Length: 253
Image 1 (cartoon, rainbow, N blue to C red):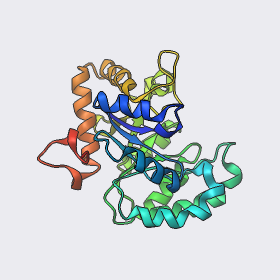
Image 2 (image 1 turned 120 degrees about the vertical axis):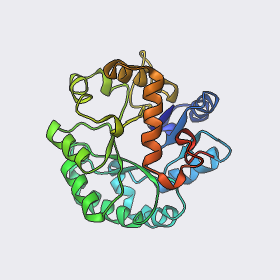
Image 3 (image 1 turned 180 degrees about the vertical axis):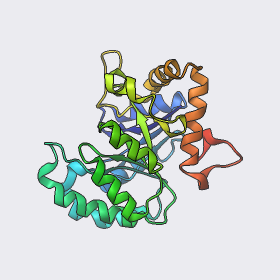
Image 4 (image 1 turned 90 degrees about the vertical axis):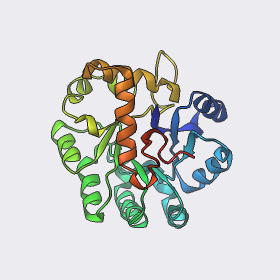
């Protein structure tokens, strides 16, 4: 199973969450807000096989972008996973829109030509994110916790990108409809823990199974079928990392 977007460093006991994912063999992308956070996560997760840090420059951390962009560029040369990056034009982020867009352009430029998995944020900025991705000639990315319209979702999919579903999304009427719009080849799974809940507690990577089972019910197939398809989708977004035809292990050392 794969959790493509989890804020492991934001739990009260991050190493407990990481160790639980490791023990359960849940391939987990530990997204970060800033490059300095990535370096810290990297030091803690160095020996983990299933939990890997991702290089982030979160749109809601715009106040720190200027001093962190240089480090982002330096680290971008070496990473396999990038996230969380993107734009946020909701009431929480609108005041820093200009900074965010300037940073996003620079981030995409730093990633140009890199073969890595990218998970991004697009709240109330879906069209702008798509425009910047197109202008940068970006590889396919994962739109995490997509909250846009049906028309915007179709544009995301038509551009070759994927969407990742989490425990909060599957409880909404919107995604009970949208799940039938998204091709099976464009689905990934995430928890976005600790910002989502599962069974009245903060969701953790092991809760990916609840998302897989929900998808299986909609697809009218087994959980194993969904798990395999998600693994294949993930591997296809990082083709240079696939080894020996084993998508489940692609990129995980």
